[in-house]
Length: 496
Ligand code: BG6
Image 1 (tube, protein in one colour):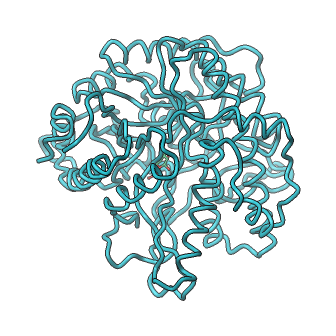
Image 2 (spheres, rainbow, N blue to C red; image 1 turned 90 degrees about the vertical axis):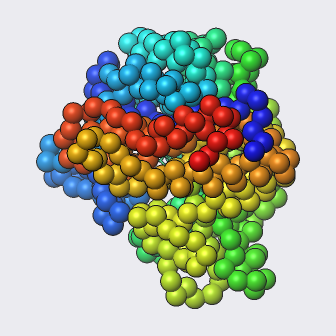
């Protein structure tokens, strides 16, 4: 095996999926706090009061009806409110990460814990101090924090009153938030990610289309929203990168994209071209701006195809993009997909998984393909394009776990998932890829982002909490905990 000395082994979570304490410590609500739990087949819903004060709900990918206001409905359970209560358990969790030998812990800062509405000029001190204590605790064990500034949790006030990221004003609010993070945690944190899975906005449109059966006009409107919102986020990211570097030249600041790693279903040239175009839309659109500092030529075609040539993009914005390129490219990798121009007989299905089924791969209980070779393919393809350090900041298996009578959890399937992925990373490194770290997703069980479930478990650490919010929150070590500890101790040599 060929992992370099100092390789950053660890795990990853996001504030809204682990912290809980949604209304403690001066925190304001975020959109995840009005989102219910779902299942593999039932979507998560966003709850609201319509313009006449009547409660209602929409699929999380639908738009709020005219005049409606987000609403926490007492008739529903909102899994992110409690999550796994890391807000109160962080010392215990970090001690467990240290026991596994973590070199790095990826986590996010809840925006509304620092700026409850998002518009305040100064941060909520209690929130600032909370994260300071968390970072100090990590440092106590020599665990490097890797901090995502935005992980799906824009303050609800900004969503409701300003229309969310469709509004240019959000750039300034985000930049204030990011600047506060860089300033307050200077010397404690040096690895930063500006936006989690920023590319989901355009990468998910096909999936949303399958779900909501949009007309061409609706689809184009969706693309317009996505491209406009992305532009503001990309500018916000570029500004944050520049500020982060100015505050501390030691800061290593990255982008973070989801991996819509697509293969052509056939060798029909039309399938090859369609696949290439899907990479452009879903991955390179954002990746190129982050790394190269501007929109790539194919973007004009995408804008033309969806009638978006008149987006709000200024010369100053383009100068910011050029000046705020990232130091590293990080990504989540779970599975791969299939693209075709032909009729599809067998669909992939499951949650957040669309397109044709790949007959060469197995699928998880949630319909996600299991494809370690795809990880090697993606690493090599991305490094070939960008030639900057890469980090895999999410990878893992969502699975049902069974707690035995003696409390043990035998999750051999999770070990069997990780082993070939780690081997794939090693092969990519041997092939010249500059991979600097690996944080598995949900090193501890978390609330699923896609389904809101607890039963879709990712962790090496089990949390006694179910989908109805019942459980003691007690933590326990799964078999994979001991296995990953060995992997880290041997720097990826011992995978047995
Ligand atoms: C990524 C997100 O999309 O995938 C995480 O960054 C998320 O927040 C993870 O939890 C796994 O997805 P899910 O739907 O299984 O939680």
